Image (cartoon, rainbow, N blue to C red):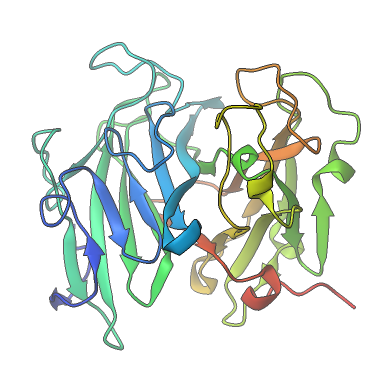
Length: 328
């Protein structure tokens, strides 16, 4: 499979690449978004296997912190798989194994794979990494091609492909699954902001609130026509909050950021929807989230087609600066 067309090899931007300048599976642009697959970690360390770790420089002096996890959740005959919860067929442990491969060919799962670095258009560099995912219990078997460009260092583009032995996919959802870390409560739609408490005023307990769905005509369009949806915290200084007193459990020590999903204008198809749910307590605890219910899962839904691409981004810019203006 040709990932980058006629692009040619270059070396210029300060990339983070396993086997080149790090000995752990972490990729990205220094000063921009970094992403990792286990055993690679971004501080604070921890979390289930079967999740892509996503970090951004939000700490004092440009230090990095984990911002969110991205899970892979394929749907086959109405049955949804969960990459962070299901046992892996290779070892029986919870969480699917993810591993990077060279040029799309299977390799030793412990090999450090730097990815393919090329120059594509307007002098920008692009790093592409193929990530294989262990099979799911519903028969789904998928791989991801994750790309990042030097002229969009805060974004990763995640393309989904079914493996030849996969059961037919209805959808393959990539969900940012830890909005509670930053206590995200503001959902930025077309011309309006919806607060989590408006959607779930009565939600209590330790379970997930129901999903809420927003069709493409309810979503914002960026200046270039891309479809955008974003979440933000409603706290001016989230680092002042210690959810579990006298510990750093579920502590977010960074400044506020905007997290968003984007779909390129040319790739928008009927059926695209933005989806959120929420929690009142932190995952697998009885501890109420300070300030009340907050968004947890944040994702796009659309019917599966080979190579469908979802763009996830983190930025210090406000949603308004991204083009998600509120109607006067």
